[in-house]
Amino acid sequence: MKKVGVIGAGQLGQMLGKAGKALDLEFVFLDPSDNPPAASEGRVLKYAFDSQDGLQQLADLTDLITYEFENVPVTALNTISAETPIYPPAAALRHAQDRLAEKELFGTIDIPVPEYRSIDCVEDLQTAGAEIGLPIVLKTRRLGYDGKGQKFIRHSDEMVAAVADLGGTDLIAEQWVAFDREVSIIGTRSVSGDMRMYPLSENVHNEGILSISTAPADASGIADDAQRYLTDLLQKLEYVGTLALELFVVGDRLLANEFAPRVHNSGHWTIEGSAVSQFENHLRAILDLPLGDTSMRGYAGMLNLIGHMPDKGALDLGENCHWHDYGKSARPGRKLGHTTIVAESAENRDQVIRKLAKKLGL
Ligand code: AMP
Image (tube, rainbow, N blue to C red; front, top):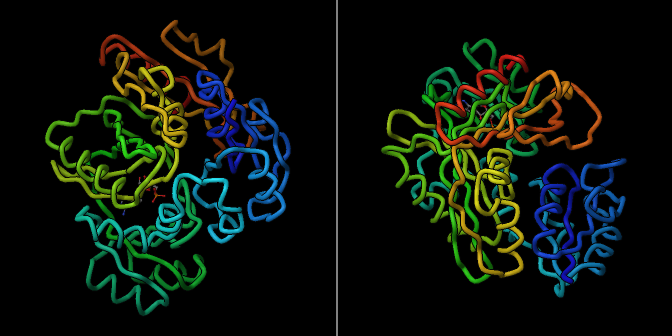
């Protein structure tokens, strides 16, 4: 029985653990928090993510290591002995951890992005405002997620406070994109270089946090570009594992927002909505097993349960709805669970989503 080490024991680790049952895998997680969700799926080593002791123990106990979040300290990973491979590769982490490096990487493989400038002081932002035009989204280069570490700037008199609020330096200014829709494309590449992609997912965010995903998204006019961008990104990074690329849709043009070097919330629907989920394919990829079928089993939708777990009974879920409770304590803005619908038609799926969204106040 192969043993997989996972850095992070949140809900993504939990879903990896569940998917690993089909492959007869054993899991060990590394996470400093009390009672993390993935504790239901294996032993948890309670250490900080950059603890050399913790990481070395994880390596000693397992055959290979992966991670469920992108802010794993890259330098700490270098301390793990070479006998235990780590996937996805560190180059993917390095780029995903720095929005500026990420944008530059997209540029090297001709993936279009919103106009951007590197910002290290208020004057830089004033210049960017004059060149790109307002509104601008100012973001920290590192450690931002779910809309955190971001300021929306409509007027130039907001610039001084915005730069100060975000730490004054190591920022990036992006043109605000009046997108029609947001989509993501998720794919997996194995150690041998085999690749599979899922149909596009359309994503609705609320205050920067993913709220609803539906798949397959209407991909007319954009499918080829999305697939080309993802393929080139996976190859450029010599990537191993599952990766999600998030894109803005403007007419029939795509602009890349960011990528996540891991399994992704906008692909939770693949658990019930695809023949083989993004989680199982991630594990297959890192173990160099043949990748599984990514075709859909119907029309899928996913609603995140954020801030508090609703009363399941009151939602009157149909047979085609699947309930996921991560077992986390409630906190505003925290992802606590999700529900997935797999329907035989897009109309039926959208009707269920509308009903649930209304009951959940989304
Ligand atoms: P991020 O953390 O960069 O993925 O941003 C979270 C969400 O904020 C995105 O999914 C978008 O809804 C919105 N957002 C981020 N950057 C931009 C932008 N340049 N233009 C318009 N909306 C944006």
